Structure formats: structure tokens, C-alpha cells
Image (cartoon, rainbow, N blue to C red; front, side):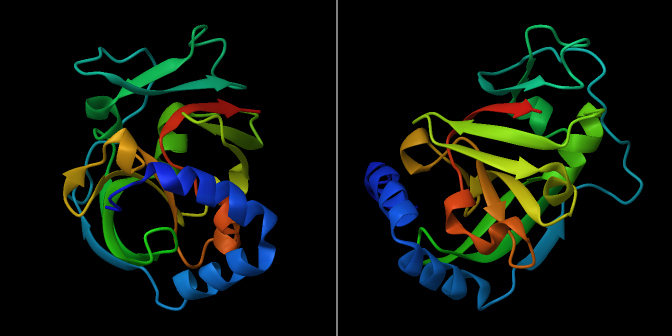
Length: 193
């Protein structure tokens, strides 16, 4: 990963104001397709559903709150890496517009996470990073199968300094991925609306 990831927080904000540069980065990112490398679960593996708060075995990664969850999880659904990675895992190799190189990410497709939490009535999700950067993604885009919630990069856990522990990876066919402004890392909260 990039040696000084903290500089990218400022670069991300600078690119928001510089649409032409963001478009150029996106064109570069989409020039080569993501290559699915593996599906880590066996075909027909048991589907995970979060019907109750999972027992945390590690440090919480982020909290899911909002529409469709408030009645089941009044304080939010807190997930650690073990609970998150109980879902089917997928690896992709993609041109990362922020890293400016090909990176292999592994994680959970957002449509799998949405199926596991069953966000009844939600139409979008507000995702907040540790630096308070916020993006809003429509539910149809999350369910498209083109948005990965990465938990590793190049086979290693991502430190906060490297944009971890989770980040949204937008595959080239993703409608929401047309804007590099939507790439978000160091996710702290996901709120369904």
C-alpha cells in the first residue's frame, strides 16, 4: 500500500474540487477490467444472516445503523472482522485510482452484506469514514454485485494508515464507480436510509 496514506485524505478532498482530474483517474481505473481471482467459499455454502448481534471475537470494524435495522439492533449492528468474513469472500485485481497501480483486494461483496442484514425499506446507505468523509450510495448500486467491501489488500490486513481496516472498491462496471469521489476507506459507520 502507499507509504504515507494520510496524504491521500487531503488528495481525496482536492480531487472533489478538481472534476477533470477525477475523471482522468477514473478513465485510467476503468481501462482494465477487474479480474475475479477466487471465491473463497464453496458452492452452496450456508448463507449468513445477521438476525441477532454476533458475538464479537475481535475489535469492532464498523457499525451498521438505520432503516430496517433499528428495530432489531437498537444500538446498531456492530461487526468485527470475523463476523464480516463469515460472509462469502471474493478476491479481485483492479486498477486502483488512488494507489495508481493494480491491487488485489479481498472482501465481501456489498450485495452479500445487504442480503445478510436484510435492510427492509432502505433505499440508500450513508457511509462515513474515520476522517468524517461521507458518501451516499443507492441501494440498487450496492445490490449490483459491482461493489466490494475490502478487508485485505495484497493478502494483508489494511491498517488505518493504509486506508483500512475496510474500504469500498468499485469495480469497473459499477455505475457508482464512475466517480472517484465515491471511493471511501477507513469506514467507521454505515447508515441505511
